[in-house]
Length: 329
Image (cartoon, rainbow, N blue to C red; front, side, top):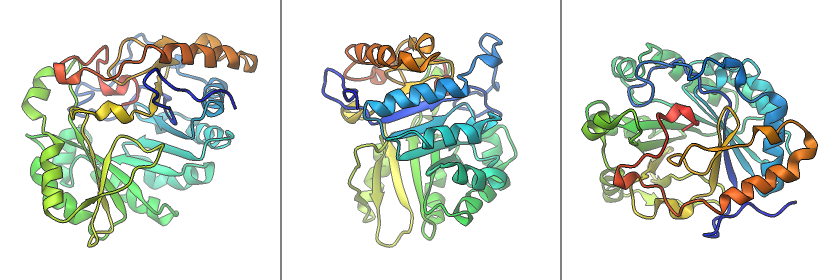
């Protein structure tokens, strides 16, 4: 194995978030309220399967053990099953996850599992079909719920559900969400709304601190769960009376970046050191031949020397990220 990817703050990177498309068929209020619009019209320019195999192998050879396949909506790729299989077949990768809006899960999740997908995150921002439609722009609540049921049916022991907390939309649903996971092995992850370049006013109106939810949980007997090395950024809480778990993702909390263990590759082959960093570093020229791996690894490691100690969200600076779909959230 090559040297472990590590930055100058001695953070090691076990976790790759790999975007395979920035196309999405939902119009979520906090991400793509006007729907997907191609930046340059080059739909065919997303990473090919051979390029995906090469970048994942390079990361695995440098200590990465978990890959999350993201988008946009990753299941819009016709070769999504092949992508899952390619990632899962890479030596050293033991967790293969995806984040999906769930609209294809009821029909396809069995195929995803057979291809090697080990973990699933589904975005469900409301348990009210009406509010779900209002937030996502799509009347697909029942299909998404059926998809979660199907995931358990085909053998997943736990499903993670992401809900972006928004003051004007779903904050009042927190008790209903807690009740929903009482008898279901779902890790419900409340994600703080994050400011991006296109969403300043919406952010000011709707941001809710996850710390208020954490205080409520601790008062109700929830306790923190121990983190694993390749876990994501959520603070996870468990309760003896609940089958489900609660995760809180709070990027505005002091120290959030201290445990950063993940890097991002965009759907067009750029390395992003931070979700809220700058424009990204081109890697695609080094993804054309297997023999380029040493140069690819060297370029990534060189860039890690410039990774900042923290994002600057708390200062109102969201970097060059126009919206979360652009580099896979």
